[in-house]
Image (cartoon, rainbow, N blue to C red; front, side):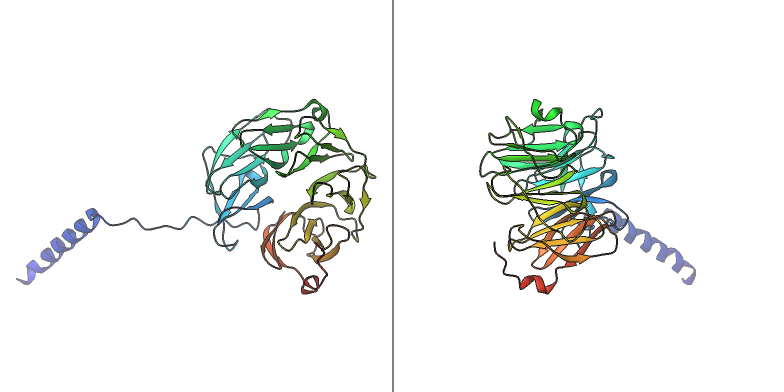
Length: 329
């Protein structure tokens, strides 16, 4: 009987394993593969309904479901190798990503999956900035005078208008669903404004002829622009006149955000993070991390911001002293 035991054990083992192999059991809920952002240049940050989205070099389109503790690649319907420059959400679920090769991606599920809406391998350079004017109208600005408009919530895009196509590089565009006012900025001190929803654009004179990298609308009349060598300018009459705002240095600024308490945050070269509690009338340094270059900022929680740039994504605590400012907003 003893000599039969190994054979009996083997038969039982094979039977059990066969039963287990064909048993109808639920598939494990595998966690998405995490992506380390340390060595990825990240150019744009945004928040959707329950997700954070970051975009950057080599087609990286990252999503975080746990407030930036971990990141994973989003699903894209077609492989993307072009560098992605900006991300914008127009509501809790609908968002857009732009980049090189005239690329425009769209999501309708808060950023988990993306569909290619536009691609132009012959585009002269990258698309760099975008804004939503409400009602399904969006503007995109880019290098070599590229300027696109959509009136159907990003499903189709047209090149407009002649007043911008002959311009140098367009770096950013600002607009709002509140009215038809918009402003576009670019190289060589270029600033142009529109009062009719982007149909026509008029030149605006500013006291600086260097590159302007960003524009922020604070109200219909109050606008903030920023760019090279620490230049920040503010207008209280929709660009008719401008005031230069001191910034305690010459670091160029590449990104800005407005916090839930009304404060403005500017980020740029040399680890610069500046804040304003008075609608851009003055700025003071909040952070400085070596010579890092920051391209964008996003509020994570009161007093805490997410920063992106050449070294990926990081978090920063705004100093407590800033909370004691009068916060005129």
